[in-house]
Each structure stands twice: as C-alpha cells, then as structure tokens.
Amino acid sequence: MRVLYLGMHFGGSYNSPSHEALQARSLAEMGHDVTFVVNQPPPWKKPNPPKLHEIVLPVDEALQRGRYDLLQPMVGDDFDVAFASSASGAPFLASWKRSTGRPAVTQVLDFPMWRLKIDGGPWRDQWRPWFQALGAMDQVVFNTNVNRVHAESACKIYGKDVGFLGSPKVVYYGIDTEAIDEALAAPGAARISGAPFQCCSTSRLVFYKGFDFGIMGLSRVAAHERPAYAIVGEGEDHARLAQMASLLDVNVGFAGGCSDFEKGMIMKGSSFGLALAWNPEIPYQCPGEVVYSGRPCIIADTAINRERYGNHGVTYVDPFDPVVVGAAVTDIVRAGPPNGYDAKREAAWIKEHRSFRSHAEGVVEVLENVTR
Image (cartoon, rainbow, N blue to C red):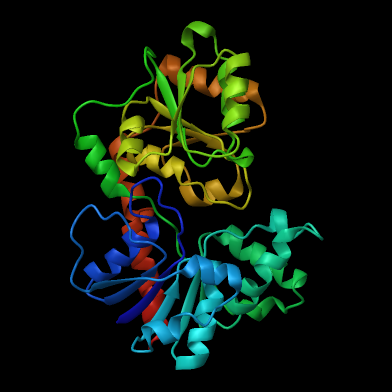
C-alpha cells in the first residue's frame, strides 16, 4: 500500500523517536510505501527503510489556526489510504479525503469523557471539529473498548446518532520495546543515589497520573523497608510532589524528561513498578514498559488497565487507599514478585500484544480492509 501517515506528535524534548514515528517506520519495514508527515524531524537512532519518506510540515500551527487544508496541496493524492495517529488529525484527513476521494482512517488514543461531560469547559469546543471529522472517516480506530464505549456517549453530547462513527475497530497501543532491549543489554543500571531498593514510575507529572498516591502508599511502608521512588517525567505537578515526598519522608528521585533508553535504564535498576495512574479513560503505557523490563508492576484497578494488561505481570490495587498500596509494596519488598509471576513469559506477551510492532500490525490490517 501507499500510505499517507499523519503523525500528530508535537513533543520531542526527550530525544527519542515518538511512538508514531516508530509505527510509521514499522509499516515501511513491512513493505508498504509510507509518507510520514510530521511536525518536526524525529531523532532517529538508526537508518530508515527506503520506503519511509519523511515530510516536515507545520501541522501544529495549522491545527491551532484551524487550517485543515494543509495536506493535499503539499503532499498530493498519490496514496491508497491516509492514516492519522490521533483524533486531532481527523479534520486534516477529512479535508484531504474531500479533495482526493481516497479512503482515510483516524486513530483515537483516548476519549476524555471526564472532561467533555463538563458543560461550559474548553474541551467540548476543542474536540468539536475533531469529533465532526471522525464521522467522515472510512474507519475509526480506538485504543481500547472502554474508549469505544465512551465515544458513543460523546455522540449524545455533540447531537449525533450512536452510529455516527460507524463500526469502530480496537487496536491496542504499544510500547517501544527496542529502546528497552537496548537498555537491558547495556552494562549497569540507573539508581537513586544511596538507595538499596527502588521502585519506579514514568509519565507526565500531572495530577491524574497517581504519583501522589504512590508517595502516600510508600509512606505507609516501614521506614527500614521503604523503597526509593524513581519518577521519570516532566510536568506542572513536580513542585507539589516534591513537597509531599519531603513531608512524608519518602525518598523520591525526579529524573525529569529522559530518552526511552535512559528510562529503560531506570526501570532496569528498579525492583518493581509503582504506577498508579487512575484516570478511567487514558490508557497507561508505564505498566507495559515495566513488565517488558522484567519487573512486576503495581497499578490502579481500573477497567481500562484490566483491558490493556489482564493478569500479565501486574498487581491491581485501589490507588486511593494508601494502606492497600503500602501493603502491596511491603509484600513485594518482603516476598518478591507475586506467586506465578514469570518475567520472561510476561515480557514475551507484552512484545507480542502491546508493542509498537503489534500496534502497527493491527493498523495495517485496518488499512488493508478499507482499501479493498
């Protein structure tokens, strides 16, 4: 297939190729001719296959201005199908589809009903053109069944019939296994200075990622058994978390924004993950990364977590109960991983079902279906 891939990713401070970039490269490695439109050049770690063609366009600026006619004049129509990596790309593909008559597919990573249901908030207006454009797609792809169901509720908010989005498919988002493989093969590991025992978590530092609940849970562990907490990420919640850790006598090391390799080194130096993101609609990548690193992970007991990870290397807890969290940590400190935990088996499951390659394979199947 000739695929136009619109990578809606505007970050880059962590010096690693985004998941979107890795997925586009995977499609090209499978033999498809892929034109990857992206806002900034990815920091590639190895040569790309000859069938991957990169075009840098000011997609973020066009999105802010509502100039959705960017693609067709710049890249043309010589493609079998177009794919956007997130909902914000749908208006661009809807415009391109009107101009070219070619099929288009958009992926929806998460559906923020916890925000969209607030009447008068800014999020409804932000999502309105994105949601409207999703209805023009030949196929909508969701990251979980949980969010597919939430999208049906969003139809009511925007005055659409439940069938407005057609019959969405579910393809699970995946982790960067290559960077973790590189870290696991490297000598040494990254640890908090002087900490004999360490757990970890990775994500943007915002309130719904549950770092505060991790700190509170660790504070309930006996001081002589209490692990240090390595936190990878940047965000506006940093100061509050640092103050909380100081007040509760929890040794937290903030690693800031790291490359995926550096993140892998920190997970390699940890004994387990403590990743308590509790948002009911945002799938959490960290547990998959930790389990792929060969470590068990304590995570929030939410429907979206259970759908993504099942019983593969994770222990579910009520994140809002520090006593329960502390008891789960104490169990791992004293007894090691839960009974039946097999690090190699669980890592293999993540690679097969929750990696960027498995994600790319699922997307290819969808793209092939709409071009038949």
